Image (cartoon, rainbow, N blue to C red; front, top):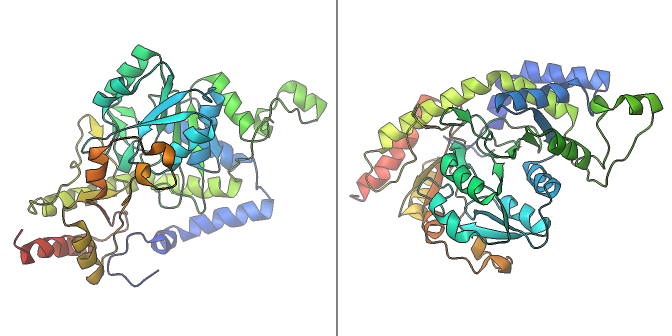
Length: 385
């Protein structure tokens, strides 16, 4: 890691703060040989499902595969259309294409999330599902999206990769669709030490399909039927895939879950400081401040918008502050993705030219946050804007 005054992330620091518990989990598992389908995984699946008010949590090796298998299990395929947004990681669009379906991209609002007012005009006879993306730790307007989905009998698969722990009108984000999919990538608030994901569902039949699809059509050992236990043989119930999350990652994630709510609280505190200090920079567009209203944001990312973005990024770097730009080039303008070139997304274009993610993680000190704000304000003051 570079010697930044304010690094964008700090994995070693977080590890050092909970090292004894993480190490204890590692050595316990290695000594017992509990690597696949063991108690830590079962506990983790139950912990996440309970947190988002769902019956089943089906852990996988990535959020991408959680979304892909959800679409696949629901029969989304050739000839179908799925509505989603462009301002997201390409994985959200990838999974639609890899199922054989056609992605239909609509624009976003100023909060970076799906604009519900654009859904109706995007619906055709081929539309089968909507994938709302809850970006940066903020929920989409799920009342509006669900009203439209119910009207046209469309499935909702929620991409909650960045928003585990967020709420919308008192309900956990991820409790509105038939399936909700979460990322456990290291940079996420609840991040593993590798990649990982989980799908959460209420429907028993869909849950069983996902259990089977993730492991070559075979039930996990902890869900074997009495007949299978008696036969002492594996029974393949369908063709499937290999998308398993290993037990050691789940053990580490269970350790982190003990700190998760505290981390969310700290992120909201940091966002409050940023909003308070940076509100004087009139040229900046800030994310909504933390509130206890309809939206309970958890700030996976703290994303500002500047019409002098590249200048500001260089200035921050020169002053030892590491920031991130995502995504400078919208997906629909990627040269290789020719099937997306037909869409017109002016708000996505505008946002892509302006976004900067500032450092945001619970171990940031108040001094680092204040320093970051000082540098941003100094940039604008020096230029008289």
